[in-house]
Image 1 (cartoon, rainbow, N blue to C red):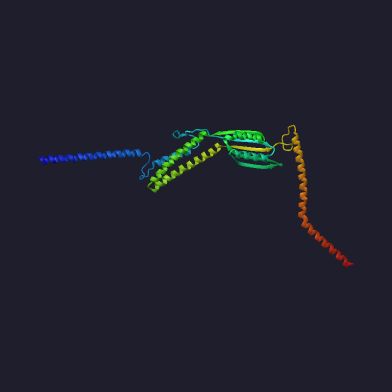
Image 2 (cartoon, one colour):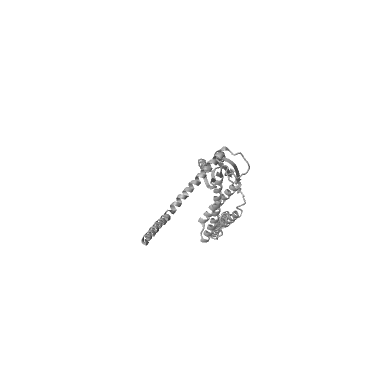
Length: 313
């Protein structure tokens, strides 16, 4: 009887231990499944070659390329500092007594203001100098350059236009931050890739994202330069005189214009005379050797003729 009771108790203990082990294993399976369920949306299994995250990023990169010209701010990554981004361009037409001196003065002033000359072209037409010069100055110094333009000559035209790129600027900036985050995720996936196929897949998508990033960075750099440094294009011409003006309408001729015209006429006449004597001297030099040879030949001929006459006598 005691043996039967002992056997029943032993069987009961074994059954309790079995049920406890099964319950623990079931709990572990449930926890494992929950953990995998949470991790699955972030990254697919490398062994299965799924790479759902990579495919999702590829779709987003393609969408970014398709919608690149359609400004759409990412609300979650909107910059905190939304200062306006405005590009200013100015065209100025000047009349100056000395065009070359005006170009030098503008160049020096721009350097003092922290800017630089991006283009300059000086040329001569009908004996008069003209110039086109393009300068870049800090946007805050545009008023100073406008005032200085009136100091160096007569301002015929001073036109300013602006281009507000604020919305496009911050849209591209937000897109850049978004793609930088995708790049970071792809780099992490690259580290965990186990097969060549997985590595090549991640590398292909990483290359696409990096190309978009460089494009956005380049556009932002250009905008920053255009916003920080305004462009002024100068067209510089000489002050109209009696022989440079093309307008036939009557006007009062100033005394200084008459004096300059007289001085220019005298100088031009002197230049013509000097050029004539210069031409004569050049011709004498050029013809010196042929004339010398002709002279020697003539002398020889004369001597031979005279000797012939003496023999005949």
